[in-house]
Amino acid sequence: MRMRSLVSLEVEKLTKEVEENKTEIERLSAMLADPNRIRVYIRDELVEVARKYGNPRRTQILKDDGRGEDDDEQFIEDKEVMVVISKNGYAKIIPSSTFKVQGRGGLGVASMNLKRDDYISKYFTVRTKQRMLLFTNKGRVYSIPAYRLPEEKRQGGGENLSLLLGMGADELVTEATALPAVQEGVSFIIVTRRGRIKKMVTSQFVTIRSTGKTFIKLVEGDSVVAVRPVKDTEEVLIASDSGRAVRIRSTSVRAMGASARGVRGMRLSRGGRFVVGMEVLRPDVPFTLITEHGHGKRLNPYEVRLVGRGSGGVICYRVTEKTGPLAAFTTGTIDQDVVVSTSTGQTIRTPAETLPLLGRVSSGVKVIRLKSKGSGVIAAEAIIKEVAPAEAEDEAEQ
Image (cartoon, rainbow, N blue to C red):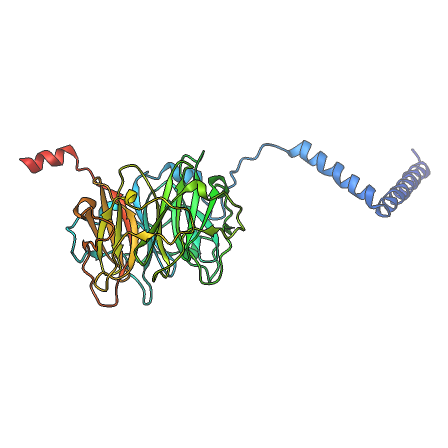
């Protein structure tokens, strides 16, 4: 071809490109002027990218701490442990076997390395795979598996619950219990320090966010002292520091919503300042009552007559200057040990059967000898006795 022919072809190519660019400019200008066309264009592009490069997710989404709770649970031994919580919010778990059985009247051993102005406010037994419910002084409840608490030695100081939960800086745990494995037909009875009582269905505690959930509206100066799972066929016993108790049917309290304050369960009278605890009545299961100065006894709950809620109750423990006010309240069958703890961290474990089964007006016997004048009993818990292995028994006999 001659040179002029080649130049003519190139001119045609450039002219065609200019026309195409003008058409594209008009199309894009029209699109930029219409937001709906922009969204359609973006959608079409994303659909094409998903069609071309999309495949199933290969990674697993875990919790914020980088661990899968369900995966952790596979490697956790399901055993009975004791949860220890201090007033300032430090908590830990220790094996129930940590406390060796002693005779009543002893000093016991230290159960926690406490900081200054701190003391043990709550302890109870639970299975490591059970989910615990922690109730605070602000009327909120938090949930955490027991194995998430640090397992430490008896003298360990524990870890602050505010680091494990979404608690506020001014929130303190005043009561704790385990979520029952069987929830059908079971409700929670909640009793406050001033004698208010409230019932909530268990399903209200199954799903709780990390930031907690409101479960009761508390007035200033009141706090939760006892939360227990109960059936409609059962009765509960509520006791005050003055040594008086009321026995009521669980059906006398209707189920309520999270924002309700509850109704009057026990009227504090005749020197009573506050409620110390509440337990569910079981057939042939006596209760153990421990006073602030370390005296105690067991009582048949059916010696307390059945009354309507709101009553002032009857005497269940003869409180004197020697015994001090009633401080703790738990069960105590012959196959249980009673663990008693003081405000200075001393803890004693003694067979429940060593505490005499006495009448309502008795003052009991010495259970734990206090280490100092300023200390006092603040908690008691009944746990199942340890059964020695058969081989160990044979060796002991030999």
